[in-house]
Length: 243
Image (cartoon, rainbow, N blue to C red; front, top):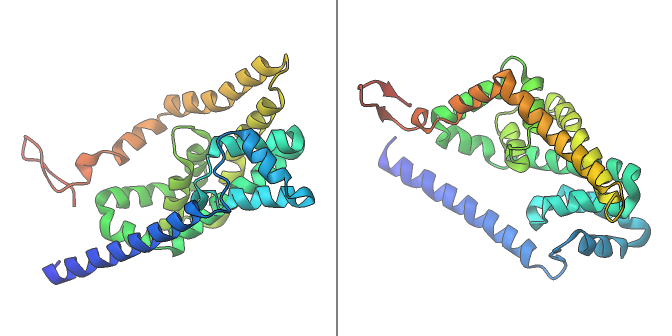
């Protein structure tokens, strides 16, 4: 790539990041952003909307990445706000809304362009992983194994143009164990059922993690995340790698 093209590309990236940063800061600093520090803060704020509380909760969860709301507090507040059963429904709706928002952000908000220009072989391997054979199972792993960050996974899925029907179904199914666990955990605070609910929460996230490691899927990710495969160069044996 010529120097002028590189400079133009960097200027476009800088302008894009500046625009995104300005929007995010404006939303974060807005007087309408309650900046909650606990599930109780969210409960009081959402319940202040009366009959609109469920809709407000789902809407806030959908745009949560822009507001910098803590995910854990939103997850726990669903059970506190609506009880365990309705809480599961509204948590799934809000979580799926957020997942869809991030997916669309990746697909139409410049994610594909950034991955294409700066992803290198890492981006190519990630794309091949998600849109190759077994896309649904792979996406389901990304949703049930707790070590994968929720929003970046959603943005990357949109950036590589994973079909939304595969992405959406895997996301809903992958969210379900955690949604059930979080709601019953929140509902059990201050009761004798707390330790049982806590154990169920550990199982909801621990079992998929152990299964993922035992299945050999973890080794695939070790290869994808190998930075040696991203940068151009050669190792001590002069074996070339990278782009």
